[in-house]
Length: 72
Image 1: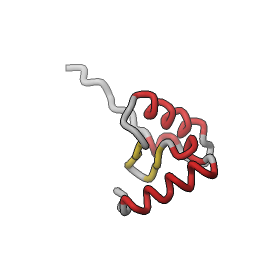
Image 2: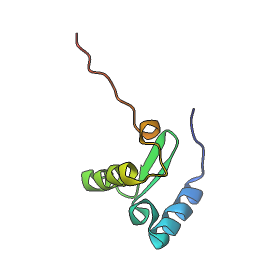
Image 3: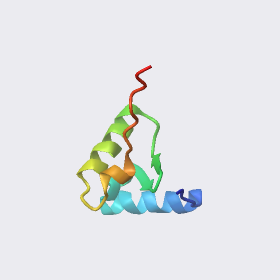
């Protein structure tokens, strides 16, 4: 499964979210199999992940997948 969108649409959604308070005030955009950050920093990623975990409308195990350790 994947997602398709234009960068203009994502910019519009992030700006709207900045005004409405969604997605940690537009700090990120999430859709299936993709997170787009407003800036590529550890702090921005941490804020996005924390917000996704706290957002009860998202099913966290559909956003993040556990990658098993390679025990070789």
